[in-house]
Image (cartoon, rainbow, N blue to C red; front, side):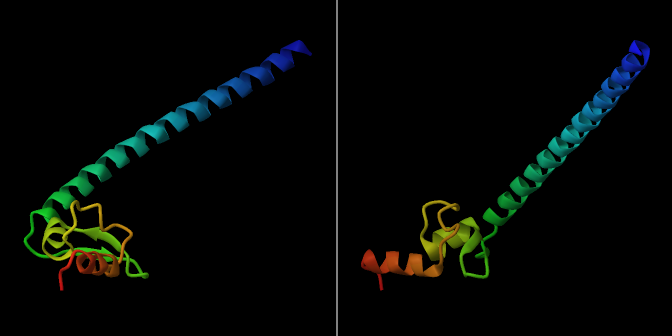
Length: 102
């Protein structure tokens, strides 16, 4: 009886080791893909921020998802490229009015 029990125990250990190895490989692949995505996003941000054109993207509720440096500086008068994220044009219009600009 003990012999069969040891065999079952060894099979369970082998299966767990196999699952662990597969999980570690999947984690390495995911990390590699995340690093590549980060590199691509950094490259895109650099390209958009160095373009003189006003570039932005909004969601269906008209909130900014993305705004390049030119749009932030020339139109929105925002301090950083992250400031517009989640805000609408109304936020920037009201801020300009409050500051005394017409």
